[in-house]
Length: 96
Image (cartoon, rainbow, N blue to C red; front, side, top):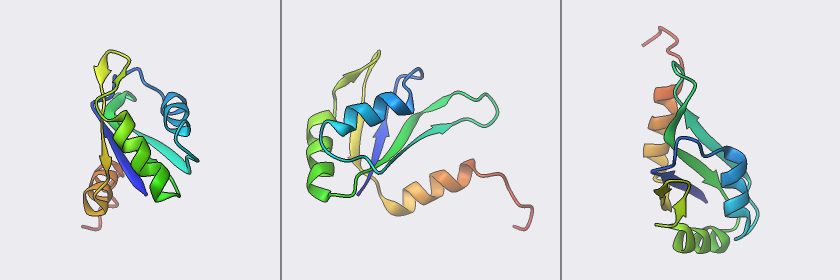
């Protein structure tokens, strides 16, 4: 299950997120979205967990939890929204 994590402190790392979610089960992947121009975090990430039960437990327990200087927002990622946000970060091929 793909999980959207928003409102991340700009200093939060992929390793920290992976560690945080690993408390609830196996983390298949963690993708912290970065600004290509500045190289800094955009403040959100996608975490994938293969077992839906583990993912739901992580969402329930981590939503509104303080991480760094902020309280993160955690929910199931909408596949269309996730694909659009990832596509907007990709360089344009010029074939549009």
